[in-house]
Length: 265
Image: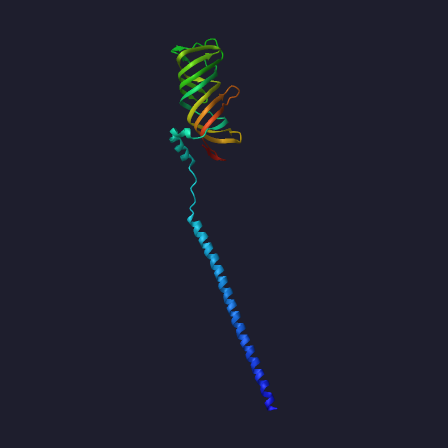
C-alpha cells in the first residue's frame, strides 16, 4: 500500500508545479502586455503633445500681415503718373451729390454752358462777347485747350478754342481762338471727353457703377481717381442742390467709406 501511494504524491506535486509555473508565466505575460500598452499610450500622448507644440510654434512663427495702407498705395500710384498707361481702363458711371473743386490744365472736346449770369465778361480773341438783351445763354465751345476751374457755383476758362457758339451765333477760325472768363455762374455744365488726373471728390452720396456687373451705393464716402477720361455733367437747373454725373473710363479708383474700402486699378 505504501508503494502505491508514492506515485500519487509525485503527481500532486507535479500538478502544483505546473500550476505555479503557469501562474507565473501568465503574470509575466500580463506585465509585459501592460507595459507595452503603457509605452504605446505614452508614445501616442507624446506624439500628440509634440504635434500640438509644433503647431503652436508654427502659429507663433506666422506673424500677422499688416493691413495694406490704401492711402499709401494710391499716393504711390499717383507718384507713378508716367506709368498710368500701364493700368487697364475701367468703364464707370457715377452720380454724386457733391461737386469737386477743379483747377486743372485740360483738353476738352466740348464745353456746353447754360447760364443767366450776364454780368460776367466773356472775351473771345481779345473782344468782349456781347450778350445784351438776353435772359438766358447757351454757350457751346469745341476743342478747348487750357486751364479749367470749376466748383459748385461757377466756372472759369482760360485757353484756346477752335469754335464757339452762343445762342446759335457761331464764331470760328482756322487758327485757335483765345477765350477767357472768370467766375461765370452756371445752371448747367457739360465737359465732354475731358481728361483729368488726380481727381478728388469730397465726401458725398450717390451711386457708382463699374462696368455692367458692379453697382454700389455711396453713403458719405470719398472718391479719388488717378485718371479719368469722359463726360462730366453738373446740373443745377431743377433743384437747389447740384448733381454731378460722370461717365467714362478710369484708371485707379479709390473709395474709402464706412461700409466699404476698395481700390480698382
